[in-house]
Length: 156
Image 1 (spheres, helix red, strand yellow):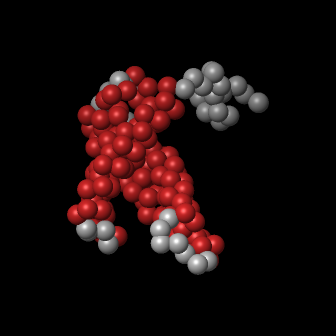
Image 2 (cartoon, one colour):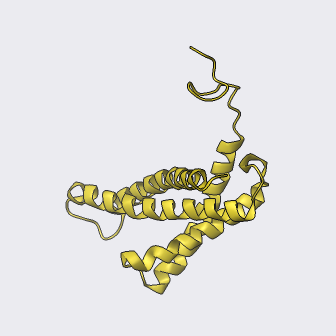
């Protein structure tokens, strides 16, 4: 596969991981602002900025984890189709990619060891889940429908 296609595939997987991780950041920030402790006097005042910050941070980590997952698979599963990989294999690499995404944490100011340890465990679990979801999407049948303008598409 040419380099441009591998790069495109890594970016697509990174973006497909970034979106649910960002949604998780919004959910976490919503819980923290409205239900967390200490209680805020005007939670609706703080929520938009806190939700955006959490979404960008976790979405960024998700993108890095997705790209790391794609790079790991391109290196170690060369010549194999994503939909043919064993579930445990993808989960293992997804877990490692989630932990590897924490390598960028010091760049965004998260350098406290307790945060990195807890984040490592959480990102390993979420990375494995993201890998399993990616594999599930790859195994989904396309019902024989090609996109217009692609090889095999019916002429219109």
